[in-house]
Image (cartoon, rainbow, N blue to C red; front, side, top):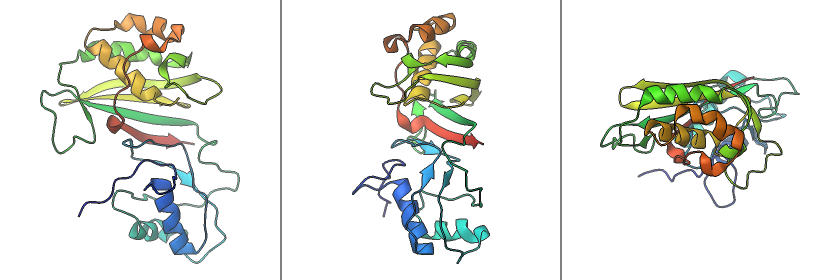
Length: 236
């Protein structure tokens, strides 16, 4: 029997979600209701290797070194706790973040794969990876990424800093990896779609600075599907 699929991180009434499932497990173990605070929300279909979340409890009934094991025993197999540790009172999973690293995975083979179909985006047309490598470097630095966000984004400012940006190939897979101080809603998926358009010759690498400067969403690339996106690392 297959597990019911999760709809993303954020707690929602009558829907299976990651936040709600972990809070339920904590309640079972400690007897306390908590408000789990994550480094950021992941949408339905997005994967996370290293999401970070914090909560506060009064209970000391379970040693911290056994917390991850205890939580995993209560959680669905699609959610795994990798570690647990005590932090300072002022620590905040979201506001204490220094940088995040995201990876977008494109399977660039003709037929894709059945096994990993929900974990990468299959694009069967051969991409020019060297041009994508050239283009991605233009995203490094502080920019106004207004043209690389989804409509309706609530962030007050669209200025973000990208510390590192790379495109690399692993067999049939092309990986786009971005590290920055924060990302707008759908920003990584739109940047990845823009780089894909570079790879098929629709956009030239040297056009990227002008597209960023324009702030025009229609000049950037498509928004790639959520299932190819991974939160890889959160640094504090």
